[in-house]
Length: 215
Image (cartoon, rainbow, N blue to C red; front, side, top):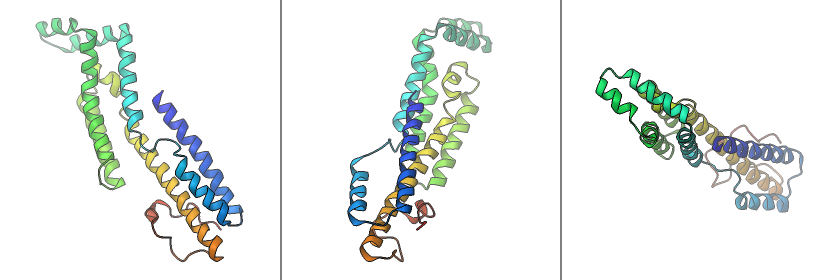
């Protein structure tokens, strides 16, 4: 549910951004209107920029579902016991409590998620971050994908981490492009012509290039 809400918030913001882009491309630059719009973008935060909270909520939601699903817990016990060749170990597995099974499901994914979130918050480039997160995802699936308890959380969740990170970066780039467009049209409204270079204080041109400069 957390992922759905996150994606929905991004889509709503995306529609708003596209509407503003179209209006900027059609309207005659006006200082008062553009200054008001600039101020509104500061006041209205829009959807969350980072998927961190969504990913953590998703983990807790998956664990909550597992905790309530007796059939799944029984199946996990049976599968773990069947994979064990030691009879004493099989008996111990069959006697695991529900919370012990949930803890077994949580640990590898929680460690992976903490590592992925640290990468997202690091100073690495986007390309390096994405590649590192994808490698962490692949390693998690290779190491724990065959564990029935861990795989309950990993399956369908791990692959969403790089996807949601990519979505958040694209969203930020679009938002930065929108702010850049407003600053550029403010210059035109004040001087009567577009600037020869981007105004000072804007995000990197690589995040905004080619999205808005249509007029």
